[in-house]
Length: 321
Image (tube, rainbow, N blue to C red; front, side):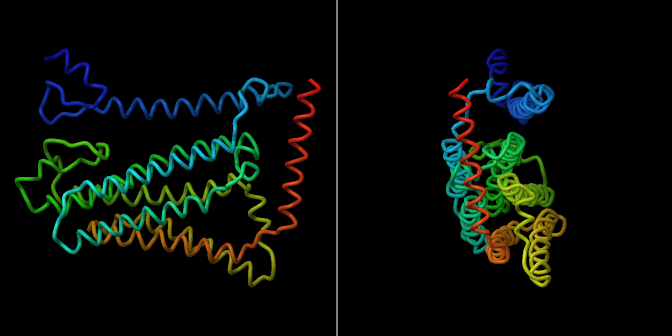
């Protein structure tokens, strides 16, 4: 009845006002909650405690176990990537070669993204943004919200690629195709877009989400070490510095390319291959940059000793108080 329909609105269920209508209230509430939470945290850290110099925010917030947080963030990203693989596995099979090319490119892309993610994150608390400063920690948390949403959208687009091969040529089965705006395991009763329009929309979601994933990963590296520390690694001859600038420009160009690839490519199999090749290229450029920007072990040891001394002084001061 009407009462049951009202109770199901927050779940995005179909109401009595139309068989093909959908309600996205739950999506908007989640977005509002995430944005408002970050805004409140930013106001608290940078306006309230930032304007009152004599007040230490650590006296009012529960201390964070950064080692545990690193572990939990890693599990969260593994969960999102696992959902992407699961979304590929539950799609009905198709006999076309393009279907299998898209499927395996999707699986390879997810595996490479996992490797790329953990190469971008420190494995100890002393090297994490949340230990470096409150500003770096806040930026890291905000980036992870965007990064997580981008991974969800990216996994959905790979599933949509496969559905194009399964149902696009079968008019009788088209009603089972998922729309872009639904979650990974949801279904709808009718298609709202023509094939060309639908594939173009999927391409936009794919290129935008993959570009955001790469941009967020590069940005988190900056939050962990700081822009100054990363710039300090550019040492050596002028030729070496030109080589570093060239590699960084290639990475920026790759992000720009994937962000705009939907403007001239909308075929699902082509996009899947481009995505897998792009992630592999990102990893290759990351390896080359590690050779071009070696970490100064002496400087890293000095920074570690300085952090340890700061932490020891903070503990001694807390005990005396």
